[in-house]
Image (cartoon, rainbow, N blue to C red; front, top):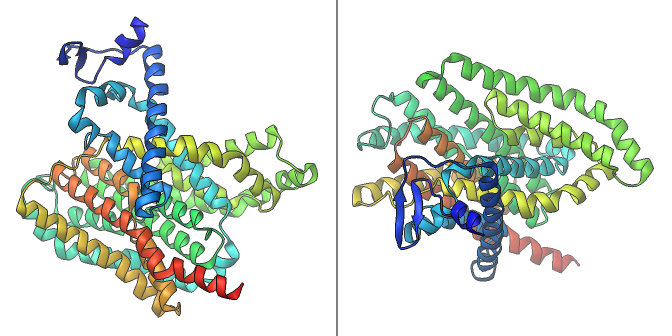
Length: 447
């Protein structure tokens, strides 16, 4: 019992004192047993917080469970729990134990995007190829265009960008941040609304996946020119394209016998599940290794999986664990790196408002116009614009990278976090207002 208390009392900056705040320590070491204790405690806290906040979001704000989980992650971080109860927050989530939490979070979000890939309807994509291409292009071009306009203004505010950054690098990074769509968030919203195999769902997922992939490639270019070397950009872009092409061309043929075996047996054996998970892990590893992101490797492998009983069994077997246990780890880990108390003056609030309005106009507005010009009806185009404007914690991932690499400062980081939260929270009610409730009403009339 005393060992458990001693282990829990270790914090990133010292050891908790029974009669007061944390006492600084010169060094804090964590044994595997200490990490294990914290890991299970963290999982319990994460699950309870996500369920409670998710229920509150559904009950009072009409938000899907995924938005509640995102907010719960921020609540558990330094923005709320760490602000009012820093010793408790540091005891539950000490920095020395977060590597395990990070690995679990990547597994969770990667598995979920793998599941999304298995439900992607390629026939819908072919039917909506024109609209998807137009929406994708608009969702990239407009954000980078607006970034060209507002970056010089932001460079005039001290501390937002790194001191030695060029205007070109700052523009590219900000454009990538605005162009991002919350791919995991978008997938959860579409799935929870029963639109996973619909034409609108496929169009939004396809456009969102392409826009995010381009944003990550642009980030690789920024990292290369900011100090990572040209090899970083070449490996990320070239390696990602080559692996995606290989998976989409050859994986369906190689996995077809496995699909037929599952059909014959009427269920998925442990052997079949092991093969599927090994293929997912390999694809996620390679995409992460080249510098894109593991979730795109998982998504691509999911797209290549044979349809039919195999994909149904994958969903039945893997989804509960991925959604209920692993995915909330992803939101919490990102929330632990988020601070919302950095924007604390009128000029900074104006800059944050400028970023927010520019982001909504550039992403949501441009995708709506592109869908309309491609022949989609007004209601569908509004739904696409509302969904594509959501950024979620994909935004937090890319801006964390920018902060860690010294591209942006903590203040701009906080502004971009605010933009991510606002655009994500507004996505669901806006989508319901312009599309969801109308479609359900039409279905009831037809029934």
